[in-house]
Image 1 (cartoon, rainbow, N blue to C red):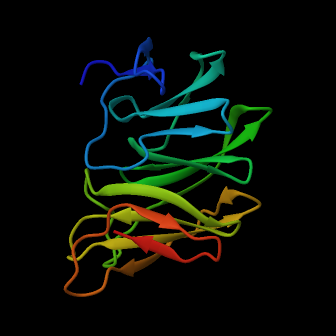
Image 2 (cartoon, rainbow, N blue to C red):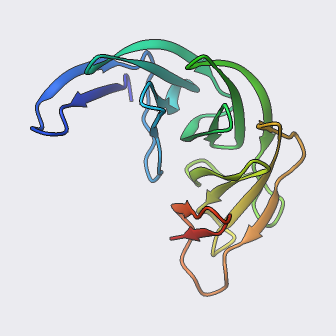
Length: 190
């Protein structure tokens, strides 16, 4: 709760290479993609308790802190696509422009909603992921049961400020959590 850190390991032998502070506090639980890499050069890490995302740049076999960006709500999950970084938070989803392998400015945001049009309670956001150049998904694992999947509109990679389309998980199923998107835009949601 007081400080976050990231540990860098050698994937071949498991040796710890680095332990770095993220310049923030409070990790997230019950989420997916709280740490995400992009293009082999950038790594983004949520600082849930600080409303920030730490962005690291790869240098050789290690990482160096490049920037800390502020989000509109406590960040939970990160994805990259279309020259943007997307951050789903407790109550909103933000888009940030990527410029020359670094994170630039916030260029879009919208609030998340449950099927009943209420904002999600703290701890319900699970994962953000890009479907295609026009949409991204955010899974919300909160009442009303069985949970909600928000479909967020993108324009030129930026999150559009209109409310997302809130889709209920099928009746009789467990709450939506993580997912993977196929090239045709179909999402497989666990």
